[in-house]
Length: 281
Length: 268
Image 1 (tube, each protein chain N blue to C red):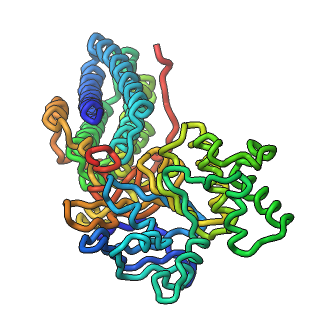
Image 2 (cartoon, one colour):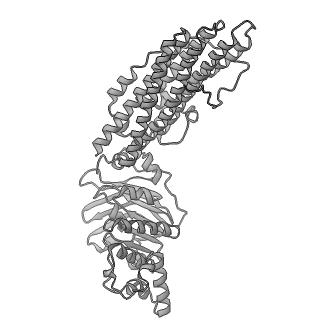
Image 3 (cartoon, rainbow over the protein chains, first blue to last red):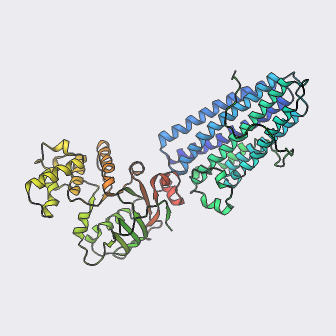
């Protein structure tokens, strides 16, 4: 029975990383479709996000089944709880990616005011870094990598605010509707980054068993982070080869920032947790 | 090294305080270096693989091991500030304050009434009206009164296993102990009776310290406030206390790898 639980836990963790990697890939595709006005690609992304949702729901069901049938404790229980919460965040991120794809379908043919597309590409690059580092923290069970996530998310928020500054400077002959759609895509990217940081917060409980956030850990030294770690169960390390393989599907992104966004002087508070959403379908 | 996370700390001279406690069966060093405060008026469960010393330690708390030839102890074990192993301590008096329930229900081959009245009689209670009141109250506290109130003269051994266990609990309660030790009290009774004994423990806990040895991990998780994990790591070596703390925390995030491996079923 113990071996059966081990196998299922390892499989769940692998599938979680696979779904995360697929989400990252689809975000790249969605941004490509938006920047190159590729409606066909956008349609494929939409279909792919629906598949991500289905896979994610299956994963959640398997996690609940294990809780009910196997009565897990300690790291087994924490891993299952982690998977359930991360699934929730994956579904939200998937919805945001889908909305970016819809933006492509609706914005195509409009002329996006100068500079906004470049700004969007820069923002996407920053978000790829957050997603990539989140997956790395999960794969390596690395609290230290996770604690970097809020810092990586900061330039996302700053650049997002810059969109508002750019928007406010548009001239009357600029295509305001096209600019609004790019703004919406930027909003989705910013939310994806926040959701990924939230996954990092969940990783804190998985690795330490403590209900603390990444912000709480910012001032701690690496040795102090090590001391916080709870006893590690095999569930967190089994099937590592497959997990690494799944994570390697994620396109590499340089950690250096592609742009030096200037802090905004006005704009919304990027920490607002409201859910912008297009009508689905 | 024992891991303590949010482990209880008693006020001075209150409750059970154990420090650097060791125990030997003759030449065999069975337990070493146990240090802990047992939470007052709470339920603490002792868990660990067979032979890890949890029952041995439990029996040290009311000196039941004194009945075995050649046993001896070192270190400190205090109840309300008094060393229970000090010279002059009467083990019988100690066992009145620290009652014990065993794995197999062990009612006396007497009537239900006499089973419960036995302890108070030894303590000098003779008036029938006083004994009647004690028997009724004890059986009520043990959640058995409704089932046996009209058959108090029936032999205790004629009751079902679960009822017998509750009769034993009533017998202990009749002498008003401060501490109740339970050595796998539910392993020989049916699931419905287990539920009744667990409910009973929850009802009694606010007024007495309860310590239970159990092999049932789910039971430990369900009923205990604190948990102590004992382990004999290598054959022939003494067992020790590996981890002690809040049950919920130990079940969700144990600090010691050995605790993690045991409660996730990877050994034991």
